[in-house]
Each structure stands twice: as structure tokens, then as C-alpha cells.
Image (tube, rainbow, N blue to C red; front, side, top):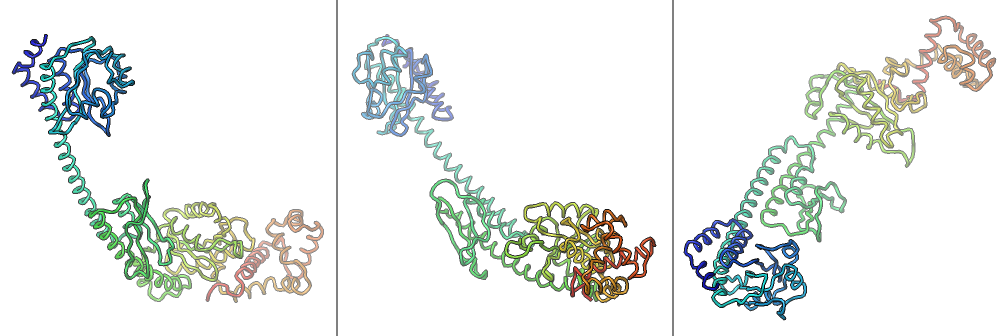
Length: 553
């Protein structure tokens, strides 16, 4: 039997085929399987397997002839223990002619091998120079008298296999180095392209956090921009698992103490540092540019608002050019919105918060504060009804319900802005006084379209001419003639409805109306008289809401 085995292995063609297959192996697992198959072919034994060292243990990496999958998955032998562990530690072969009575067995391995019916093993080390890579087994399911010639034959198979394993390991390391270099190159190229895009977009990017987003994306960490006192301005990215710490910090020159901080679980490498320095430099340029732009916009917007909302426009073309510089366009259908808060005191939401919501909701929106109210210029796309719908949505968000928004007429030219502003402001003030229940009111809804832009003196004179006796009587004798008249006309001269709204008796309203007709010399049945009275009542409400300031002359 021994001679037959040796003859088989001595066959030159078989040896050449084995070496050829080893050289063709693409990875370590494939080479191990070729070696195990060669053992079965040469020795004609029942089972063969190979184990490699992983973290101080031998782990089965290839096998041939096993009956169950348990041994392949559970076979794990500590270096120095059992037959295989001793082979690795001592770097010399071991044989067991009757494994059932071998004192070197490890209990767990004994059970696995007994379950497979293995009774004889020959084990040799896989050596590269003096380093043990693992072991190679030949095994029978019966007692077997291994010979030294068989041991030599298995060692030759193991030597060829170990040489190829070392080659594949070196090739794998070399490939890993190449792949690492390629990844670094690709990463550097990607960073260069990203920085180039950022630099090219400095004149168009409005978000100062764009550069921070780029650093966070490249590094996989968190980047923060803080003021000198430590207050966070903006941030990008998240810190991964581990021990996060500050790995890079710099103060941006010319920004009054703004500091960029990089937080990560590892120190940045050379490429990381180069990317950080380049992008932060671009960020500084972007921040300074945007800061200058904001100061310019603030200066120009104040002047523009004064001219647009007061109607003092001497050079319309210059106004259009200055609006274009701020990214605004004079389009037909633009409207003025004036907002105020129903609540007063420390619990009232700030107008600045509503300004942020409007700015984010409407492209090209410009806002300012005048006379304690927020004024916004909106350039909606589409029908005015779309603007109303979008503003209603804004008012439905959280604490925005505390605001009243007044809208004026759509603007078809620069001069219309002052008229739209007067109407929007009047609508807002009347809404805040409770003349309208809704949070969104317009001059058209309140019937004051065209009145709001009239001089306050003219409004008061008209009110005095039409309603003077009623106003005097209410002021001197405490009567409610003006309110009674307003309620009576708003309920279409229906006495019971007017009485219910005023919480007085039916006859009280009738008597008051008769007295009003007498004082004013009017007849409620006359259409022209009612029109003059309703117009005067709206002017009276308007002057009361606007107070002494009124529409600006």
C-alpha cells in the first residue's frame, strides 16, 4: 500500500498538474482546497482538511470527505493544544494510528472527530520559512499504520501549498496596497473636483454652510462654526462611534472671532488636513462675500422700502436696477403684506420668526419692520388666490396663528407698491382690532379698497361731514349710535339680527335708528344714503385703526 501511494505521488504528470492548479488559484481559500483535494488523490484516504491560524486558533479553511457540516463549522483548535495545535507550535509532523486511544485529543475535537468516524490522522505543518501558517491533515475512518514515507509525501504537498499561500498573501497585501493607493488617488481627485466646484460657485452660493457640508462629507465627521463666545452658528455632519474629540480648530481671520472646529474619532491624515485647510479657506472667502452682500442688501433694502412704500420714486429705472442687484424682480402681481401679532408682551412670538418663514416660503421675498409691524414684499407665481392659499398655510403653522396678515392690491407698477402697502397696513390694523375674525384679511375683504391710501385728514373730514352728529353724541353723552348704525347696516337693516348682535332689545335698536335718521337727516330706505353711511363707517373704522399716523403723505 505504501509503495502504491509513493508511486502515485512520484508520478511527474500528477505533480505538474497539482503545481499548475496551485499557480492558477486566485485566493488562499481556493489554494487550500486544491491542496486538500491533492491529499485525497494521492493518498486515497477518506478525509482531508486544512486549518489556518486566526488569532491564536486553528480554524478549518478547506475540507474533503466530511460527512456533516458540524465539524467544518465548529472545528477550532488553540495553538499548542491537541495534535494539530502541537504541530503548529512545534513545527513538526504528528501522527495518530488509532485516534480513539490518543491522549493528546481535546474533548470538543474528540467529539467532532468521533462523530465523523475518523480513527487515524497524519498532520503536517504548513511552513513558510520558520513560520507556521497552519496544518494539513490526511485521515482514515479506520486504524491505520502511517509510515515515514507517507509523512514525507504529505510534507511535500504541504510545502508546495505553503509556498503558494505565502505568494497569495503577498499578492493580496500588494493588491491591498494598490487598492489603498487607488482609493487615496480617487479621494484626492474627488476632493479636488469638489473644491473646484465650490470655488467656482462662490459667486452664486447663498448658504455659508456649503463648505462645512463638504468638509463633513469628505471626513465623515462633524464640523462646527461657532462665535467667539462659543455660540453655535451652524454645523454639518455627525460623529461616528468611538471617542469623539476635537482634531482641528482654526479662527477665521476677518470674521470677528468665528471659529471652525472639526470633531472626529481619529486624527486627520495628510490628505484630510489639506482638504480642511483648502475648504476652510474657501469658506472664509464665501463668508466674507456673503457678509458684505448682506450689508449691501440691508442698506439698499432700507432705501428701497422707503421709496416703494411711500411712493416717492423719482427714477423708476434706477429702482429696478437696484432691486435686481438684490435678486429681486419687479413682476406684475407682486403684493405687499403687513403683519402684526394679536398677543402683546414677552409671550408674543417675534416678528423676526414670521419673517424667516415668509422668506423661506416665497422666493425673492424682502422683509422689514415699520411702525412695529412686519412688512413683506412678495412676488408670487400664479393667481392671487394662490398667494392667499399659501399665506393661509403659513398662518396655520404653530404659533403663527397669533399673527394677523393684511394684504393689499396686486401691483402692476412701482407706484402701486405704496397703495398696496397702505391697504395692507389698514387691513392688518383692522384685523388686529377685531374687525375681522380671520388671520388673513385684505383691503378688498373689508371694503376699504382705495380708501387706505387717502390722506388721514381727508378721511377724517369725510367722516365728520357724514357722521359728525353721531360721533359727537357718542363722545358727549355716551350713546352707541355709531356702533348701532354699523351693526344695523351690516345685518342688512334686519332689526332682530342687529338687536341680537348688540345684546339689546328690538325696540331699542328701532328707536336708535330713528334717532340716527333724525340727527343725520337721512332715510335708511334710500340707497344713496346707505352708500354714503357705509363708506363713512369704513373710513371711521380706518381712522380709528390707523390712529394719528394714518397713510403716510
